[in-house]
Length: 284
Image (tube, rainbow, N blue to C red; front, top):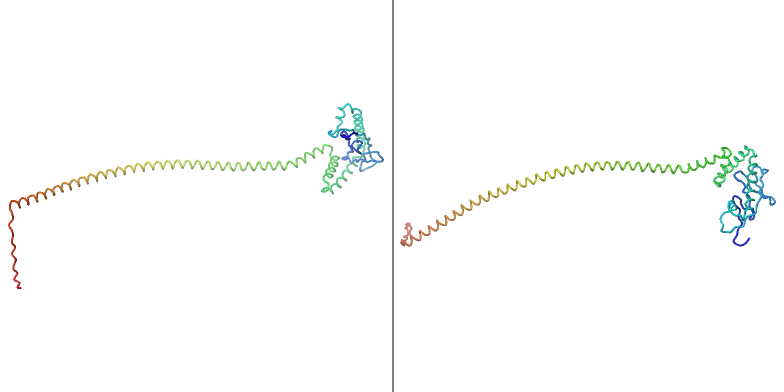
């Protein structure tokens, strides 16, 4: 084998010693592979007397970068036609022999053995949960048939999915409840809003009406004030006119009086008056 190559076994064959390929022993049926002096067998664990022989085939040299090898790959490559025929023949022989051997095992013995294995696995369930699951699957498959595994898968799936579905439903219900509560709040707010707007309109109408009435009162007051001012103006006008007439009359009278006196003094000069003291009879 040159550099850059590795030995591969076509699936479902497995490499057993680095150079040979053999069919895997069905561990689910409690068969394990043994090697006695180069002779490989699948031995039934509960009863080692029950065995199925293995006929190893040589592994094939493939490039290291090649992917997993299958029987279909060999079938497509004419170079490996002989190897393909040999592997297919060994696969068919082993499966038929295993079917016959396993079918001959007493069913109750299988159930008993599976139950014992399940009890052992139960004791170390925490340390090896995969072993417990394998023992449980083997036991209930014998009891309920091959369809049980599908039912079990559905049950496990439901058990894993159901809580998530329930959480989702609870979340959806919670959202719906909040939505309904919010909608009720919105309806109440809208109702209050309508009432507020209605009161606002009524209040605005009242304010406008009161404003109009107030404006009318202000106009009436202004008109009355103007009327009173006009009356006051008329009264003071007559008073002023009377005062002016009186003032003119007084001035005319004063001019007349002073003019008359001046005229009389010029026409008839007054005699000088000599005042004689009056005797009172008091002696000095």
